[in-house]
Image (tube, rainbow, N blue to C red; front, side, top):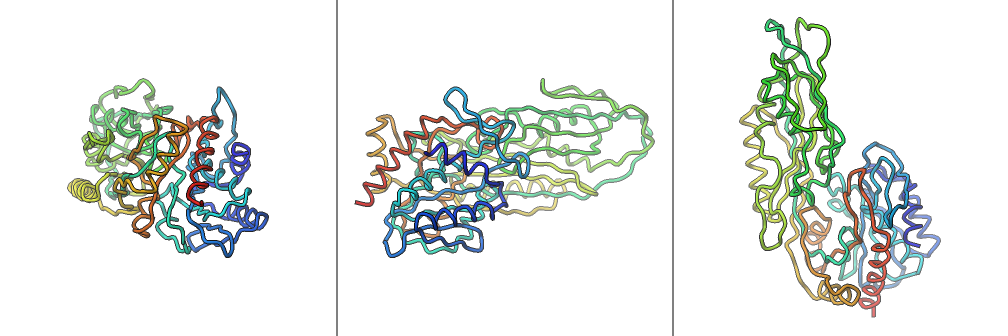
Length: 428
C-alpha cells in the first residue's frame, strides 16, 4: 500500500510554494477516515482523532524540490528502485507522507503533522501554529535505513548583490565567448558536500579567471540547497578560455563587438577564490561540521546576485561562518542579506531514541544512531517544544534534489514494519 499511496500523491502538485492541491487531498482523506484536520496560516496540516490523547506525533514535510516548476514526476520501477524520468522523484519526503496516510487509513491514534515548504527554508516548521499535544515526535525525513537520526546541522542562506556594470569600448579587440557546463552529478548541499561533487559555478568562474575574462553575463544553479549541475556565462577575453571540466563547452561568438556591458571584475575574483565546500570536519560524528555551498548566480539589470547556503552542526560555528562570509563579500563590494536561518539540533540520546533503536535492532542488528549535515525540521520543533523527545528515521533514498534521485522499494517496506512496531510500543 505504501508504494501505491506514494505514487498517488506524486500526481498531486507539491513543488515548494504549492499548497492547495495537497491540502485539499488531506482534508478529504481525513474526512474519509474520521480525523480532525486543521490547517494554519503557513499551510501546515495537522490530523488527529477527536477526544483521544495522542502519545506520538508523526511528522513529514509535503513539499518537494522540483527542477522544473510545476512538473509532476513520472515514476518508473527499475532494479528494485523507484526513479523519475528527468525530474526529482519526490521521495523526500513523499515516502514519509505515504507512511502517515497508510497509518491514518488504519485508524491509528497519533498526531499526523504535514509541514509546508521545508525545501525552501523550513518555512512551515518555523511558522507552525497548530496545537501539538504528543510527548514524542518521530520525523520521517531521514534517508538511510538503520540510521536513527538524533541531531542535525543548522543553516542559513546568504544573498549577495552587486550593482556595478559599465559599457566599455572593445578597444583591445577582445573576442566574445559563451561558456556552458551541464550534466554534472549535482546533489544535496549538506549530506553530499564532502563527496567532491564538482560545482558548475566554481568551474566556470575558474575558466573565466584563468583567461582574465571580462564578465558580461552569468547564470546557473538550481536550488539554494543543491550543488549546481549547470551554468552558463558570456565573457570577453583576449585569451582563448581553457575548459576546466570535460562537461564544459566553450563557443566563440561570431562577429566583433564595438562595445559590451562589463560587470564588476570583483565578481569573478571573489568566485574564483571562494573556498567552497567543507570548512571543518567532525571526526567524532564522521560528518562535516561546517560547510558552505555556492548555490545560485543570476545576472540582474545592473549587476549580479549570488546565493550561498552555510551549515554547521554547532550554532556558534554557524554564526561564525555567516559573519566571515558576509565580511568577505562586503570587502568585494557586495550588499548582503540573510534568510532562512534554522538552528542546529544537538545530538540527543534519550528514552525515546533508545526505544526506537532497540526496536530497529530487532529487524537490523547493525542499526545505530547518527547525526546528519543537513537541516531537519526536528531542530525547529526541539526549539519550539523543548520537552518533546524527537527522533528521525526513514528508508534508503539516494541523490535527493536531483534527477538521479531513487528510493529502494524493499527498504520502504522494511522501515514501515519498524514504524508500525514503534507506534504500537509507544501507544501501549
